[in-house]
Length: 199
Image (cartoon, rainbow, N blue to C red):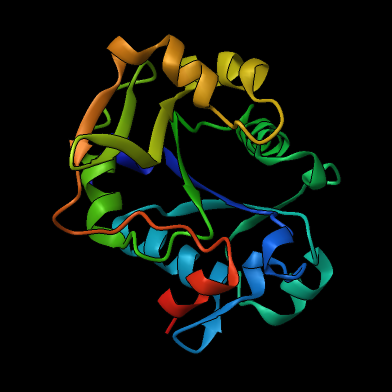
């Protein structure tokens, strides 16, 4: 691993309340015998993220109790119900003032995206101006890597459930797309039907 990659933090957004899942926090859904948040942290670590920040919201106390998140920086987002934007802001804020040069943002409810896809996005990082996104058959998806030069702009644009969408649209020409459709599936666990994807 290069020094460059060592300065990339995995930023896992795991605050969602699972509104369409009957209010079950997504972080606590079970996948392969453990909470989804624990599985997602394992994916980031297996891909090469030594530093992992996890943004918690819905059921945060229970998540801390039930999931093994040792070694992670846990970030509480009291405004999680306001949407993904607030979690992204809280996560980026937790990285400010550290020696982190980039944040690789992943979502807790996408277990079809494994270490191979994450590692490809990590490998495309160059410097603090990097803007890299996984693509699935040419369509941009997660994870997304933001060099630190982009954090302030992303935080300003992150409102409601849009996350970084507006910022990425504005900076579309700067994004380096990394095709991952051959090694991952970018489905979300949003509805009870989607629970069939969990093992």
